[in-house]
Image 1: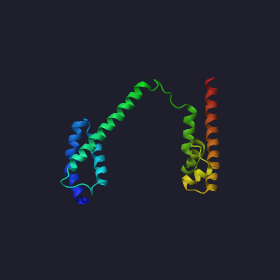
Image 2: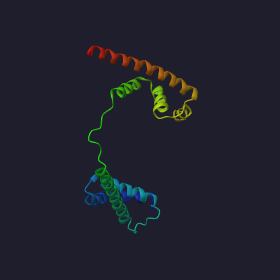
Image 3: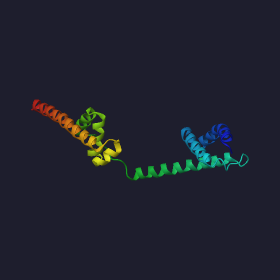
Length: 169
């Protein structure tokens, strides 16, 4: 099947197959997803498809198998969640984390990226340089400036917190 023939086949068969899979899955979005995935797989084999070789049946079969696989995966996930339910209450971030995130947001993007990659993602200076495309010396300068700016901002936040504590007493 040529590309043009495949395009025509897709235009004619996609709505029909989506309707059939919608009846099978009960979810229009899911039906579109599995039919689209089946067409992607068929695209790779389009030269093997013969116009009279029932390509629509092949795509319908693949789409149905994809839908069943998704159901099975969802069912396994649901069983896992039922066996290990999430905790009733998950505490939110503490005030110190909120202050740190606010301070990080105030840094220039390049410094913030260097600080996060180095200190929070545990990458070496060389790895940060490789990931950001910056020279090692530039990364070191960004880290130094970023740490200094964070120290100032976090120090100011700490002083504000202490002043508020003094007023409460």
